[in-house]
Length: 139
Image 1 (cartoon, rainbow, N blue to C red):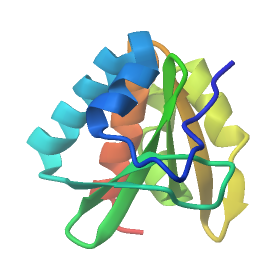
Image 2 (tube, helix red, strand yellow):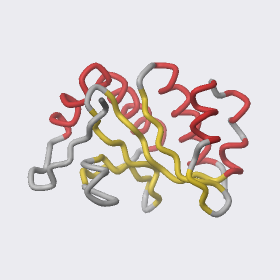
Image 3 (tube, rainbow, N blue to C red):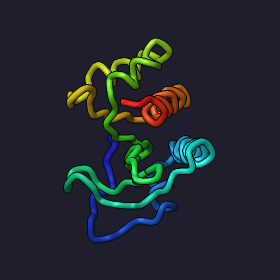
């Protein structure tokens, strides 16, 4: 249903990734605009984490990895590590969907890895809150 771009032999352009994301491309553009305007991120198209993850755009602030956003068929998914301390600053203000994603994270040291599929504007707003906390809260 939310298949990813898995052909490692053909490097997609950002426009290819947006087209693959279908209706969610506007959400991705809004996320990218937010990341650029608020944090001056750099981006890189890459094929990280192995053959099952597919193509993504890596967003970074200076040398700090913020997230990878994966193109999915009519969706997008952000994948990143975040501390419990950072999420704790915004957890009460998140919707049920985002809260469930945090509760189901893959644990890692004092936080975890999150795979956050964005399907609605509400999901995107919660993702922005989480990313802001990741960037601004010292772990």
